[in-house]
Length: 247
Image (cartoon, rainbow, N blue to C red; front, side, top):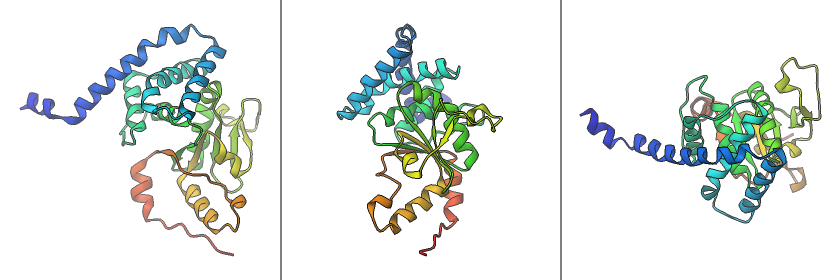
């Protein structure tokens, strides 16, 4: 019965298919390691051009994941494991990936965010609180910056930032929070990747719907998003009303 259940388990079969893709990503690693930073950026730019031209992102996935993993290894000293590559594939497909604390979900999300940001239509990472949005954007920021993508943070009406390695705020003891340069809300949303809290996204949606002119709107058309702690945000927090005054 155990053998039969394994043979019939659709999740296990799907994971095996994804592991085969992970092996294809691994095959590109030696080649990418030989490139300098400029060469890696050039490979990223090539992928971005293809995505903008309308190439299917599924066709770009293997190259994109390999490039993102190499950038992570160089910038923040973390290399995605095969199971994390599988998690990235699942997120790219718009499915739910359950991961335990400490299994690197922040790093996993970087794969799908990078791939889906290539077309220049913007992607969102939705978190449950301000600190996580700031921390994760500042932590993953060096990866995206090396690959030519911008990162915005939106956690409040007066708390919007762009990750900028040349900007330094030494008042923060956490180095991941020291390169967040204050910008307008519209600039944060215009970034290739925007980290935001679920509540601020909701309030900005309401504000934009009250705007009298398109120039007053901050959000742009929705493209792709990853929701962290999805059960909390879409089930528990769904019962919390978001109300804004019309005055």
